[in-house]
Image (tube, rainbow, N blue to C red; front, side):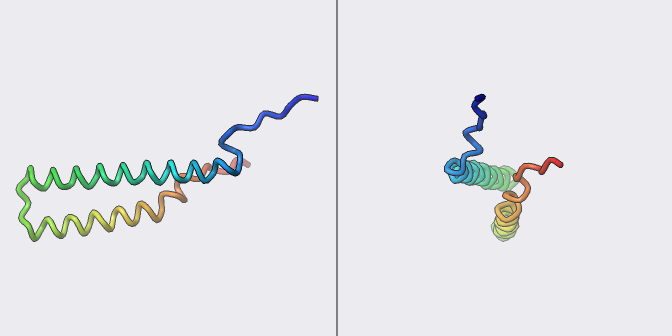
Length: 79
């Protein structure tokens, strides 16, 4: 009898590992984005009051990414 090939990623115990890897990657990308925003504000001499506004907008953007990215990363169902 032929053995059915199953991918490592399709095993249930690896789903948590994938989620942790995804969360870690997202954390790194958002940290890189925060650093880029800070460097840009310094480079363009953004005043302190406006820096606060930019940081607030950046936090909102990051919250939206965290909320919606998991849904966007799910594989499309094949019919």
